[in-house]
Length: 376
Ligand code: NAD
Image (cartoon, rainbow, N blue to C red):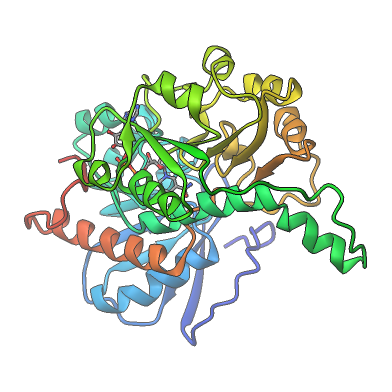
């Protein structure tokens, strides 16, 4: 085998396990990492795409209970890499993978029966193509809504009280407060767009700060209403909110929900938080809103073009995406790289649900968790 141009991951196994690497010849050079701490007890094979060290740690550890034959690769699932799934019963993909019609056909030809998304959102998946190719698709509908809701709150507090700037300032012995002025969250109006698993937890947290919480969703949550959260129209949210946080899925109806027209209806100086999906906001229009000071603060954990940037260390690279560079140049913009889900509890639950769903689908058992199956 040719090891000369191999892709070096720099990965060090945290457990004292056997680490075996296999280099597959393909249109791309890709290292398949087999990190087994047990002898597999199942003849079922799962190939994980877009893996980072933490994915491999969690899945390897929990596989002690399942005994699947598991392999990991770092590349995203896309047309160039789909053929690596040859011989796998299931593939596991993440938010920036591109399982389109071509990929689905390749996976089906490779014998793959299940596409398991280790995330809640599925806007990136061609479900119709999966159906046509006989591939079942499952996801993790709810793992830790608290993880994402709490990260949204972290973004609000950071943007407001500027703790990220204070941290750096004090380390340089600059004890001045100039430029760090914030505002009380108490009695401010917070608009929540989408009150499903995450939006509901977020709304509840914000009531704890003494905020007035307004909600907009296609379906009302009676429990939230009982807690004093008022459902209003989207326009009312836009017109009255000091802080707007997006928690609805990305689909044809919600794409660019934040656009020139909706921004024009917002309060001057509004704080906009998006931990849902990048496509919910028209980034160029948001930049115009920041320049005109209509938008006073922006916190985003997701970005429309994030697939070219996020989950990678590009600190020594030239970033060609001028839009993200412009965004990051504003002092009142906070960007995190799709880390809202990233808590121990969430990763544990993602791993557990993924293995359980794959096991249930491959062995023809009833699916135990509601909302898992996207293509049954
Ligand atoms: P969910 O399905 O439980 O809730 C979504 C809510 O949005 C539902 O109540 C639904 O009725 C509502 N909705 C749908 N269309 C709407 C519309 N046009 N206008 C207003 N509301 C609408 O989903 P969730 O688990 O709360 O997740 C929300 C989103 O968060 C996901 O779709 C995903 O994109 C994103 N997410 C991000 C991260 C992260 O790490 N940043 C992690 C998990 C989920």
